[in-house]
Structure formats: C-alpha cells, structure tokens
Image (cartoon, rainbow, N blue to C red; front, side, top):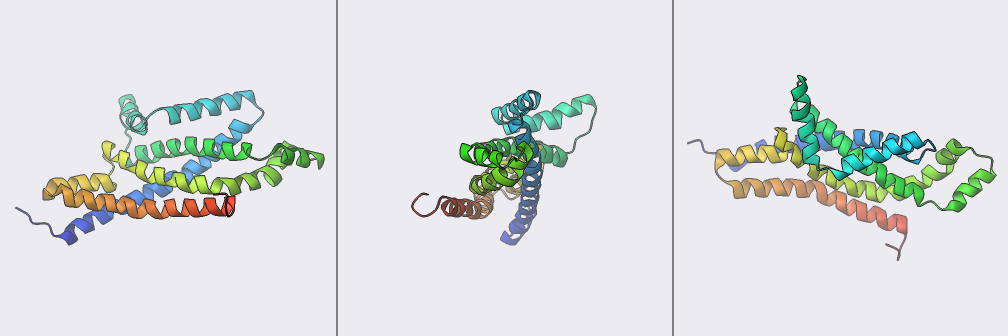
Length: 218
C-alpha cells in the first residue's frame, strides 16, 4: 500500500488550487465582458435587445449551474462535437457569471437618480453621451462592492465543474481522498483552500461597501 505524506497531499491540492484560481479569473473576466454587453442590451431603447437580455438573464439565473454544465458537456457531445471539461467549465461559468453581473450592474444604473439624467439632457447630451460621461461612472462606483462580493460565488461555483471531470480543487481533493482513504483530512484542507480564497474577497466587499456608503450608512 502506498503511503502518502502530508506534503504529498498538499502538493496535489496545490495543483487543483491553481486551476480553481485560473478558472475563477477566466470566468469573472469573460463573464464581466459578456455581462457588460448584456447590460447595454438590457437598458437600450431597442425592444428586441431588451427582450433578448431579459430571456438570457432569466435562463442563466433561473437554472442550476450544474444543469448548464451538463448541457454544455454532454448535450453538445450528442451532436458529435467533442467538448473538453476545461472548455465546458469555462464557457458555463462565463455565461452564469455574465447573467448575474448584468443584473447587478443594471440595478446600479437604475439607482442613479432621475435628476442626473435630466441634468445631462439639459447639457444637450444624447443617450450614449449620458451613459458614457454621467451615468456609468456613477453606477460603476456603486457596483464595485456587489461585484467583488459576487466574485465569492464565482469561486465557489468552480467546485461544480468537478462533476464534469474538470480537475479543480474539489475534484483533486476527491481523487486524493480516494487514494489516501483519509477524507476528513483531505476535505478539511479543500475547505481551507476555498476559505483562503473567499474570505479576503468577502472582507474586501464589506470594506468597499463601507467606503461607498460612507461612515454611518453601511
């Protein structure tokens, strides 16, 4: 029987930890880009784009992330297209993230007072100029805390990718636990890994929220 030391376990988990960080960053960056496009579609004056954005958000917010990953990984394979676990996880988390970020940012845009729109209109700004120079800069300031806070959900969402075989922290932990027959230690270290990723982000989100709201308003 092969004996695994604590150093062996930590080395294996470190590999999964790195893949979790990479997948989280990729999903958050690409999800932010797609989410920004969905946001513009959601707040545009075009009825067709508004409906597209609404349906997009409802679909990806209203269905489990696990089902979305299954559809991408197994559903597309039924069409004869080979999809790797890495690609399915990246695309699935990107779409999931973009839907939530778009809705978070829409709420921030709508939080801007009507007077800001009227003031910018009095300066002869058209809709695009109003958004670019007046509304979005203020909305971005409001959006920073909830956006950082949602990043915690993205990190934890990467664990679901283990179901389709992507070897992030949870999947790596499962394989090591099966090999060492010491699930308590291994999954304890896995939980610690997620805590080390999510706790600083949660603290940062609260700090940013306090700064945005001001003393006594948080």
